[in-house]
Length: 129
Picture (cartoon, rainbow, N blue to C red):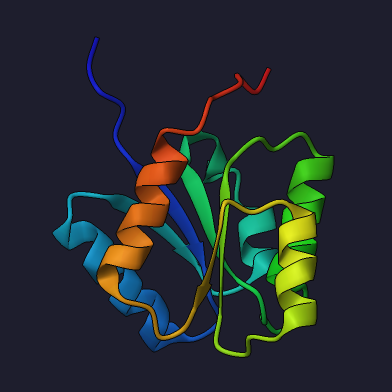
C-alpha cells in the first residue's frame, strides 16, 4: 500500500501569506489547495482529499472558526489548524471550542507549522461516507 500524500487545504485572505505557505509546503513535499475565502472553499468540492485544514481565523466574510463549524456540521472529520495575526484569549478559546489540533500565531516558524501538519497526518481517520 502506498503512503498517502499529505494534502493541506489552506484558507487565508492575505494573498502573499497564502502564496508563501503554499511555497513552504511544496518545498517540504506537501500538496496544498489554496482558497482566498471560506466561501471559495465551500463552493469547491475538493476537500475530500485533504489531510487537514489550515484556516485563517480572520477572513473577510465567513470567519475561519465559522467555516470550521459549518464543515463539522456537514460531517467533516478533518483535523483543523487555525492561524491568526490577531491573537487574544477569547479568539483562542473560540478556536479550541470549535475543535482544532493547533493554534498558530502569525508569523509562525516553519517547524511549528510542519509539526502541526505532522500531528494532523497522524490523526485517526474516519471515512467520510
